[in-house]
Image (tube, rainbow, N blue to C red; front, side, top):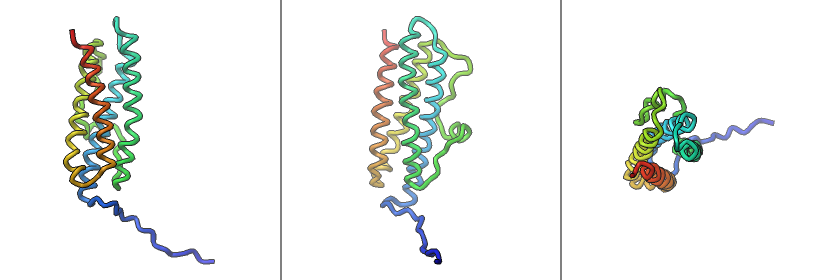
Length: 166
């Protein structure tokens, strides 16, 4: 019996133009790179924190890097849903991310808190910057993802900032 020669269409027709999907995917790629960079920094700080706040910061950093780790997959899968390849190498992440890499020598505990605060605030700004295009394109799933990420990053930055107040 002969196999069917039905053509399978790979064109994407989800109601968002190719141009808008490409621009949104590029923005999400930056968000993914920054999330992964902050994940690595937070995990590094979890391993290397010292001082009188060791127990509380060690546990806090673990909760934060776990949340960041769980965030990368939904971001990458949204990029794929838009029809684009998700970046996934250190070289790509370094090129796309606006966040600095973790310091080679672990800083003091409160400097770690400061650096993580800055990282979460930067990612919040990146996520927020995507809203105008996402709203124009009617991309509600990406808007929902961005809203979730903003909530986490703004709350985490607030909690970290609270540790630095007198």
